[in-house]
Image (cartoon, rainbow, N blue to C red; front, side):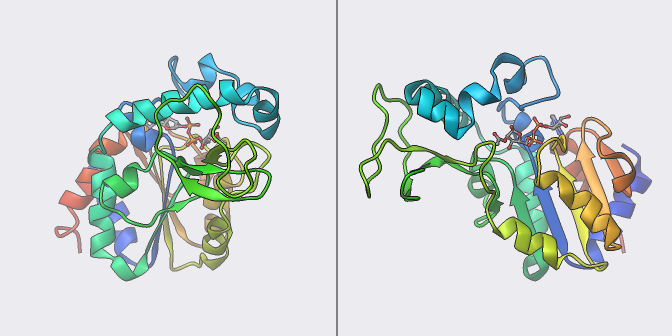
Length: 246
Ligand code: OAD
């Protein structure tokens, strides 16, 4: 990794409010498959329209739940990695001006000690009823029956945002608050999914500085400081060199 780019990133991160936006890549080194980008990515083996839409749930709720239970079991066996832990540490340097958005539903940022990420796509550790909207904590790892909503007794789905559903409105509050003083660091996302993929271009248009941490050079001209490599390697470098760069 080019050490000048790391220094540039730290300078930018020290210069004003920070928004970090993470995707599946930040959890890859914990052993959780990403959706795209490699041969064992989830959307290579499964079709989103069969598993991650309201229509899929209506058609075959048990099949959908079986897939989410399988993912819950994988996640429950995983541990936060140095990428998650470094973001928590970074937040402690800048507690008053640090916001973490994540598309991930795995809860690994919380398990790494960061208490309140904005979970744009919800949490796999909840259920969400598409009939009455009730959200409940649920940590079952398997079941041969589809869970029922505790409020209205309908069949309830996992507490995640599916294709065609609205993301957490906190995302739009953060997006509208971005100014030229901000630094936006985007970690481990392919930038394929709306609206999370708007943040770099919106931030750039407002004059903010944009950093991208990814094993592939994604998002092209919307990024000022591309840090190409694993988030579990690059984010610890930022934390280790934080005090050295003025
Ligand atoms: P993707 O799977 O689309 O992209 C993961 C990105 O992480 C890719 O660009 C990889 O190159 C990169 N990557 C892989 N390993 C990495 C590592 N160790 N360090 C850094 N980068 C790494 O994941 P997302 O962009 O998060 O939504 O996907 C967004 C949404 O698409 C998900 O939330 C999910 C999915 O369909 C729904 O299900 C609605």
